[in-house]
Amino acid sequence: VSALMWLLNRPHYLTGLWMTLACNQMTVTVLKNIFTRPRSELAVYSEISFSFPSGHSAASAAFFGFVCYVLIRERVGPVLLSVFGGTVIVLLVGLSRVYLVEHYLSDVLNGYIVGALCLTLGVWLTEWLHHGYDPSVQRPVPQWQKVASVGVVMAGLVVLWFVVSDYRQKLSMRRVPVATGLVDPVQTALTEAIVLNLGAPQGA
Image (cartoon, rainbow, N blue to C red):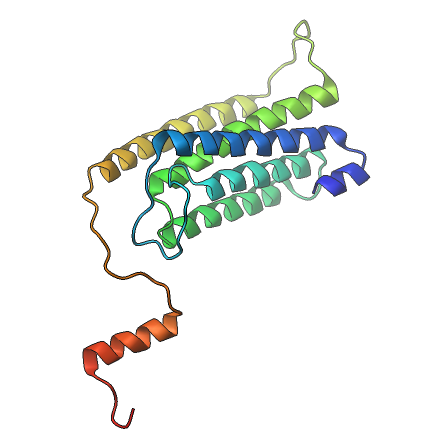
């Protein structure tokens, strides 16, 4: 994406993109080391980093959100198609983290918040570099932008409530040690489970 923006002579997008990604990565790293929430012991894959917030969710919201912004700004294809495609990808990334038990729900939701905030900063920087900012010029704000702004704020408050609620619930959970881990291929693990429960087949 960076190379494409450079070849198309869009340096303001390039700066905004890397500001978005750098802000996102630094924020996620700081929050992980502040909260130090351990990952679930039922996770499918072993991870050494802390759980809160989800770095994958934050990065997907920041990156794919910025790509959607560029597509809309450059009028590449229908706006609804760009928004729908980006939203689906971001939601699927977060869903995969919960499905694999790599993160709790609040990890993913907070990751979305972090990514969205960094995306906002990157978009603002891009617009400022491209058009400049003159506070003396009063530009009318379309009605749809006002409605969208209110909707985003309300959605952010709802997500924040879910984050706090889920985080407090997970803090009160008692950690249960796991006797076994998923270290073998699924087929091998299932075969061993059948042998342990039913006994080895005749002639084996």
